[in-house]
Amino acid sequence: MSSKQAIRNLQGVFLLLFLILFINILYISISGNHLVSGKNIRAWAKQRGLQTIKVNANRGTIFDRNGEIIAKDSYTYTIIAYLDKARYDELNDKPAYIVDKKLTATKLAPIIKSSETKILEYLNKPKLYQTYLGAKGKGLSLEQKEA
Image 1 (cartoon, rainbow, N blue to C red):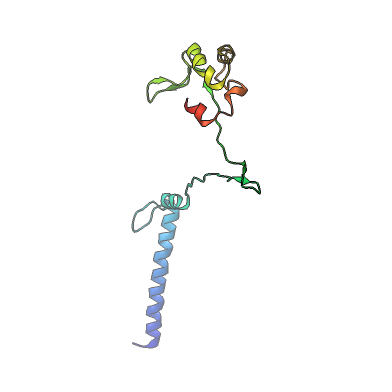
Image 2 (cartoon, rainbow, N blue to C red; image 1 turned 90 degrees about the horizontal axis):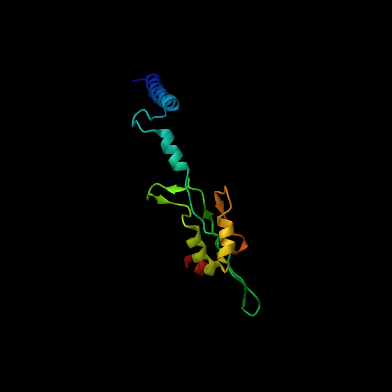
């Protein structure tokens, strides 16, 4: 075999490989599937490129020069009272809104250090989807939340 024939054969092989690669890329761009494996390349690329990572935002503690804590991370909670009957937990087949306003006011009053009357004022406002129970219903500690 002459050198010209060897070069022609090599060019043919490269042309064939390029043609296969080009056809595969064209097929992927049109159908979204890989020509040989049949896998959905678009779904694979989306899944591979996205990643959700939960990052906790702990700020740390600030100390004075004597080692006393002057500022630290703290968690506070807010009570949201849902009033609208449209808020229904279909999964557990039970209401996800306040059913007994008087009982709710009686149980919340000692926890948030407010009067039952004041809590009932918030709960009895007409045409509300939800209410926040004023300033006493915000900035609650973990102990108050779990009570």
